[in-house]
Length: 129
Image (cartoon, rainbow, N blue to C red; front, side):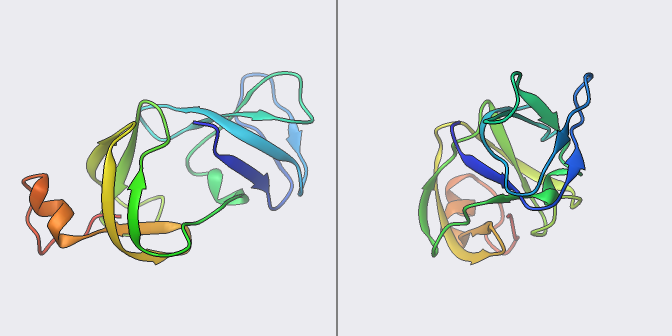
């Protein structure tokens, strides 16, 4: 995955062995599990640490600069959602390596374009983030 993340506010990891993560610490995403929890290799910690999807709002990721084509960089997949919110219901699953077309970017989320939904056999009037 290798996406860079930065801790934006202090919090405790969700790993079995808890670790305090401090604002400004940097890490790289190792993997994302089937429910969206993220395993991250932080520079200042000896072991990779888990951050639950609900806790991930305390991390910053570089959002896409503008709509366009994007490759899914998380393994094994990324859940797309009905709304650009971590707690929103899962709409579809995008596999690692998939290239998708997005037509809007908002707060680090991208919305799949109507033509992308159509290529996937999904209703073009739906929204998927």
